[in-house]
Image 1 (tube, rainbow, N blue to C red):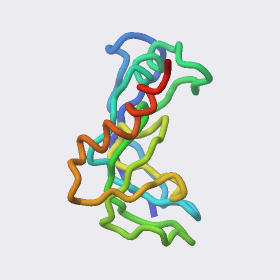
Image 2 (cartoon, rainbow, N blue to C red; image 1 turned 90 degrees about the horizontal axis):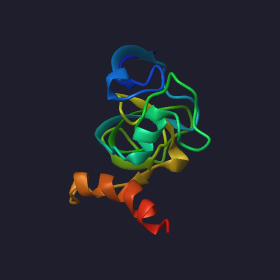
Image 3 (cartoon, rainbow, N blue to C red; image 1 turned 60 degrees about the vertical axis):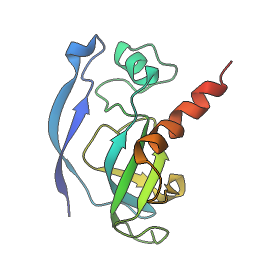
Amino acid sequence: MSNRYRKVVIPRYGDASVLEIVEDTLAAPASGHVQVAPIYAGFSGADINMRRGVYPSQQKPPLTPGYCLVSTVKANGTGSNTFKPGDIVACLTKYNAQAELVNLSQKHLIPVPASLDLQQVTALVLDWSTSLLR
């Protein structure tokens, strides 16, 4: 079963004016994967540099930016039983966080206690590692 969703796309390198919001179809999550609905998605210099085409070893356009997210689990692929629908998880994604739905490997997800400030958690996922670069 597939779902219709919206996502941000960088169709070609350029300034912020090249960004597009498009509708697409996302397949059910594969074995070992989980489908999530982002609550918050980080935006960083990495996303800007990808849009400009200067980020090291990046995909070529078209691509969906979004390096990290905090999400609600929506569905599990076959054999994915670490998380259940409704769980809150975080992930360092590199791509695709700027979307309404994302399929991610469950091995890259970490559980997030609901008592935490989810905006702050989103910032911690990427920005702590950025701050360690010297």
